[in-house]
Length: 233
Image 1: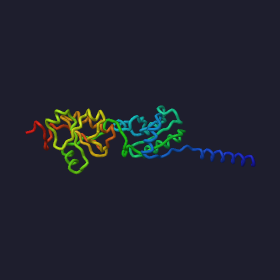
Image 2: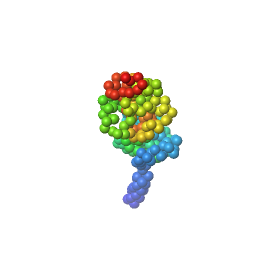
Image 3: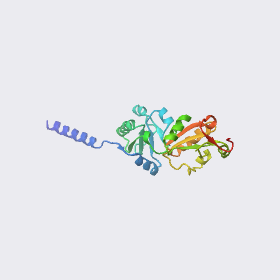
Image 4: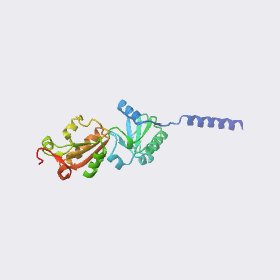
């Protein structure tokens, strides 16, 4: 009986010790995540949303590893359990589930920082700006005093004919990171060109440079509002 009690005590102590050493993850803010990414070039940023969501919009250099893949035991892209891993999703729920799963599997430095829905840092992807109609563009300009309409064409095209109130910011200026005419990255920026192509290219560049509200409204070719320029009668 004494031997049985002694063995039972040993087992209880071992279980309690194991519980005390359970690895947990930590929840951090976007600002804290940004600092870790900046300070640690070897950090892994995991996007645990679906591949379709990742393709549309994700944080630069993030690895796509959906929650379902983790649940199926796919850890091939993160072999080092001592490496710092930052996890995010869209709003935070899947990030929390994924972070807990990683911690349960023995990953020692796991942080979740919520979702990309309210991320203020740079993003990349196929759908990183919004296409709007001319009517929607006019409504934004009329209701938001901070909104800026930019003409992304070449100088000669802008001088010949442009929308009244438009600021000349060609695609080349954005590529050269000349943002002097659009300093507020939180203000709505509406891009247009001749037929829409340069506007889409410029809108994509602006989002990659950290602009939060970027819209593309196509071209001036079918604009029905007021215009001005050297070739306007």
